[in-house]
Length: 434
Image (cartoon, rainbow, N blue to C red; front, side, top):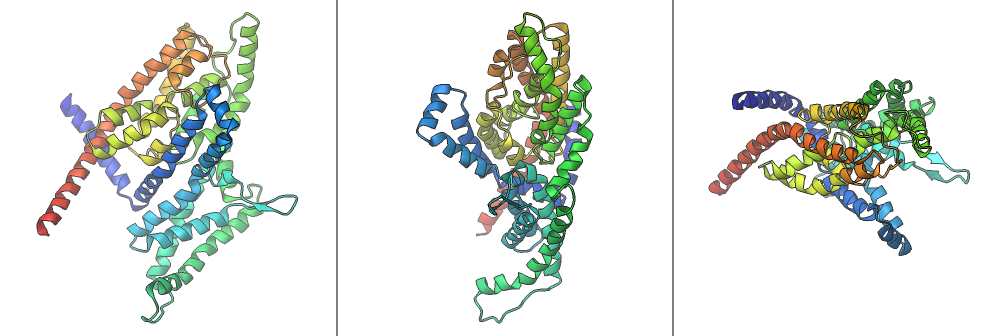
């Protein structure tokens, strides 16, 4: 078994190494990781004001702190802005140019393609939805394209050269002026092209494409599995998958939920095994999309590398409350080839297990419309109206999540331990030379 396990790990590491060594993929990964302080800060604040304890939330509202904290979290959740800068900065440094300048041009290009609205009183505004999770994939695209163009122009030496007597901070600013102006031209064109379409913006176009395969999904096991797959796949790609599928899952699954509630209130049984709350349970109450509770537990308690152990401990409390951004973008899970299978596959397995558990009567269909995302899973399970069996089921699946993620985490840990050992060896050699 040890030889088989080692062979499995080596194969995954080889594939992961090929993908992660790609300049653009690694820039996305490292750029997202650099936003961890913002994500973690938002997660901690969100936990503070979102605790489902009425006296506590009422107290925060009475002293005016609740809305203030909520506004801070809204700012921290403007992920697209931070990532447009961070990914471009990382990519620029990898390509040997000024990373700060690359990040600045990327941020400018991203804001250019972001639609600007105007109120009836002629007040211009930017819808923050385009700057948050909805705009992440646009931010990634812009960061990669803008930095590539910017780098190409600089390498062509299309720059302004000032005399040596000019202070460096002044000459550096002027030097990149032509590359910056040329870089933003394609994004001005993109904005103009999409503004005259029904999509109105690049981000609107991207989401329009994502919505097409979801419009005719029925309220069936196959439909639920498809939506779960799309949700987790989008999260893995760096898009807020829950936000994308929310309109469809609400439209498709609310009616069965209401019929279930009415039937149970009338003394009958729920006519539909699947509804909005069964779906919400799978994508939220097991540590969020990807059933990440097992991942953070493995990171916190079963890894040896300093980085992953620290990441696990940092992410554990937010993930208990189903807040996944620190893990998804800070680890990151995004575009991580090692974690693709468990992240996308485990929620599908969970949905199938839930469906057949309902069919054989291990517990009943949840009929409480409890869409409170920060309630820890096991607690929510006992409150959803599915019987004590649902709460136990969530605990069992949490344990299953640990088992499923464990071998993949060990692969990552092995890779990171080697990297940390190489870094320590290099550091010791440098100290010896000094």
